[in-house]
Length: 76
Image (cartoon, rainbow, N blue to C red):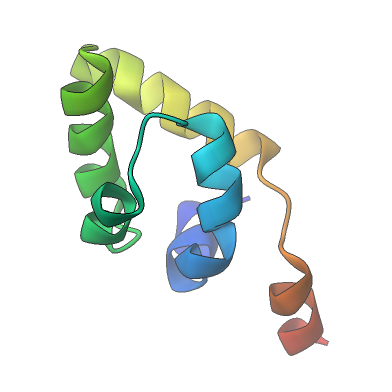
């Protein structure tokens, strides 16, 4: 899955993001606005990891993310 798809429907992907990054508060996740660079920065801050590690985690999420039901319905 491409990040632009996740970004365009990011609120629908929030439950999956919360499962992936359970330390995030709703406010922290909302502050990213679905922007990959902002998410990477938040991962670095909250999990105390390097930029490279944050990018690895985002890439793993991108590869395993499942399209939410509401997004599938809108695409049909």
